[in-house]
Image (cartoon, rainbow, N blue to C red; front, top):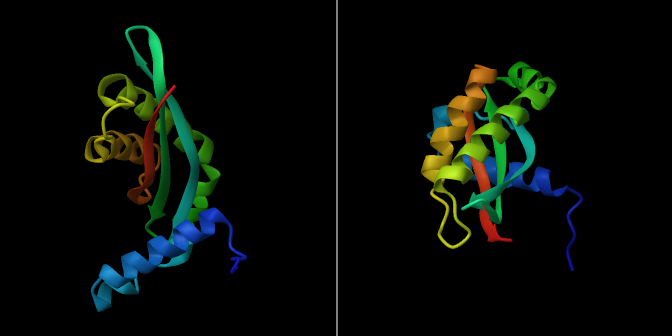
Length: 136
């Protein structure tokens, strides 16, 4: 059995970096550096329908800053970023989520991205790396 010394968030960032750099053109690959990614703790919000909790929506997000200095700023503003992400996720869950249908990640991204960028304009991209809607 092979074990990694990296934690789950480090593995996620490593896999994301490998996929990002592999898909980028040679000139663009130098722009993506591991120190520009900031992992946000998972956001979990209730899926409510007809005044009942039907399930839970879980979203894992990685924020990409424009540079390493911006990433440090994102880490310092994480409570504000989580609050904005939580508000956007609650609104999405209220309007568009169900534990019985697939999550429309494009719609979710369209709601999360502007909410997070309004907190810190240093965000280059909001990457949704894991999403699930589970019944209660």
